[in-house]
Image (cartoon, rainbow, N blue to C red; front, side, top):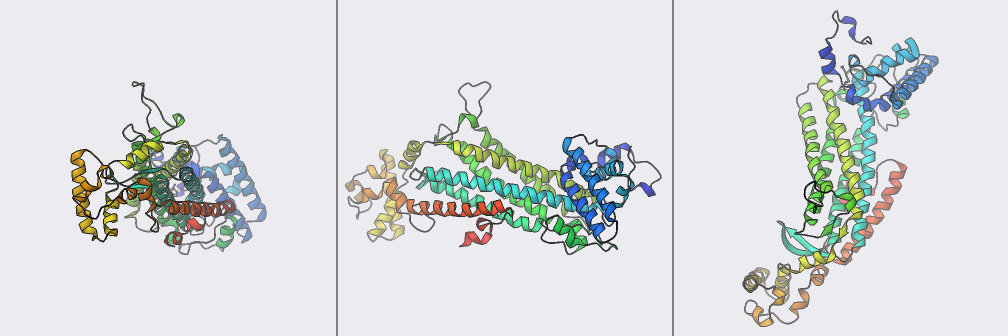
Length: 481
Ligand code: ARG
């Protein structure tokens, strides 16, 4: 069994149950590419400032590359006795590079090392999620653009309220996911801070060059306080908060897709390729994808709660509790990436049942507000108009008909200004089209919103290609303008 780097003061061997209990390599091994990149940068910096020789740095760098090769190929042997990925890599470096490996940890602690690794990992994953959110926004805009004139009932309290364009409804999700993307981009700025050089907690006596390490690892900033650097996990909390909010949006969308694909709604048909069947009921086609996305929301919230609870009573600086930060973080990254990815694939293959949607928008008194507005146009105060139309609705209900199916004479019993020109205003197209207030569902508004979204997405794409994750739609101010 490998010698523990910290066992100088120990006279008894670690109990194997303790090794198993404290080991984290089963999950933190996913940090290895970052751990090795960080160690390579640290070695180069130690040589640059003269703490080790250039030849020693070269040996370390070569040895680390060899170890990385073993990890990449999956031939690396893990051992509970070595706790975590950091100690595994250092121990293996000793085998492949010889005793020069003993110099790697000069001016460094696992506390700043793990902080660096997690930040580098999360920086990459946040950029990947930003790309996935961009892709999701694009498929939503494309679906909206492909159905510019489909009318559906808009709901409040899950009761039919007023007609809206399907495209307007879809663009509401575009807005939510744009804000989610902006939140991740904003969070990325605080993830992207280089903690190495904080050492255990107090900094180090060696003449290290932190700015040089930051340049090598492409960090725009180094941390300003060594104690904060090793004990701060705000960046992970922010990430989990952004992820939780994004899952709320994915879950709401999922809930609607589940409802809309029921026989009762029949608004959409999911592609066979993105649905599953029942093992007992031959007729079933189930919306399992949106159901699972909705279901996975809970574990992301759970991860946020786990990390908030983990951090809330920790005295400064590093505490081993913080090893527990990784599993919720990793699980959240995997979960949200999978949920975004599957939606990007599924949404373009949804069939819109436009007749069902239109039919649903035509019954259930969705034109009651418009009749009241008509009366206001004839000079009646809105509250009075509301009351008159309410009475007309009650009368129509008792007859089993809609407002627009009543005659002018019948309607005049409740609202004397009614004339023939009312009926034009009660069609779904007319109702949608009259809602031209900024942000309203009128077709011209929705067309403009789609055109603007396409512009923003194209600009975004350029930024994403340049790789910095920042873009017009990522800047929070975008949505207030
Ligand atoms: N595996 C540890 C973690 O993830 C690394 C840091 C350990 N530091 C220590 N002083 N024991 O937090």
